[in-house]
Structures are given as structure tokens and as C-alpha cells.
View 1 (tube, rainbow, N blue to C red):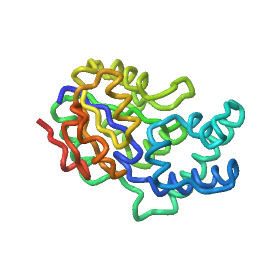
View 2: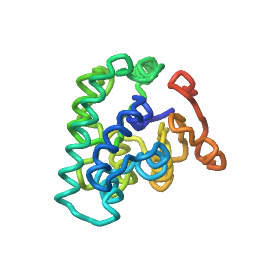
View 3: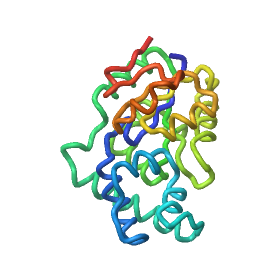
Length: 217
């Protein structure tokens, strides 16, 4: 490993159930029904909020509505996280992997489709600033159509070319966008049970269930 970019939700923090609950509240307002777990993995994970809300709104673009419901969804999400104190922690092996990377001076950061209030929430709740500079975390600031440019930005911030970056992702969208960005080494944290859909992707070098399984060589 020469440099690492982590996804966050579903990768470093297993929170799909909170996203389902929060997006279902938004979905009920926009289309009078909950989302399904399949929808979360196939249509939503790894995408900026505005595109998810556009999808829930019948693919109609409405920037004011997208901004309103993006903030509201994340407010719901953070409330659900705080309520579930038993499961509100980083995935097993994450802190050990962070320590390993720091000890070997391997630069790393996060590129996440979360918005800044959530990133601030994660940094404070999990003490992420022990291992990485919060200013180098890339998040959904409203300017990204997908994660391709997020990966490019993260690569520049940690000063490692994308061709030498290891990306750790959990979503189909994240995997596809990292490949588009030029990443050649992807590790799938299979929290969404998508391994059968990605077995033929040559850029995926590992499929793991937690961070203890990541090959650190």
C-alpha cells in the first residue's frame, strides 16, 4: 500500500439500517412508501444526496427540494445513530488498520458521499482526527455529480497518484467510480452482500467482512 482512500458509510461504519430508516422517512414524504434494502444498495449507496432525492422524486430535478431533504435526511440519520449506542462504533479492525498506516507513514483519507455536518459528526464521535487531517476528508459539498472527482480530489490531498492508491469501498457506485477515476487496487468491504455482482472486476483484489481482513502488504 502506498496510499489509501476509505469510503465511510457501510465501510468504516456499518450503518445501512440507519440510512434505510432515514431515507424511508424522506421516501414516504416524496412518494408515499419506504425504500427497500435492495434499492439502497442498487440505486442509492455511494451517490450524492441530490441524486438520491432526484431518484425518489421521480427523476425530476428540483435544487431547492434537494437541499431541503438532504439536510433533513441527515438530521434523521444522526438521530438514529445516537439512539443505537451499542452499534455506534467503527468497524472491527479499523483503528488497528489506521495505526498500521500511520506507523508506516502511508497517507490515507476518506472520500464519502456524506455531507459536511455528518463528516463533522463522525470526526467528533469517532475521534478520526487522531489518525487523519479532517481538512483532507472529501465529502459531498454539492459540487460533485459522482465520486469520480471525489477520488481525484482525495488523491491530490494525500499526494499519491490514483494509479498507486488502494480504495476500500462497499458500494457498486463507489467501485465503478473509483475505476473510472483510474484506481487499480480496490478492496470490497462487503456489507451490502454484492460480492457475486463484482467477482469479474479485475481491479477488486480482496473481498472482506471487516478491516482485519485487509491485506496490508
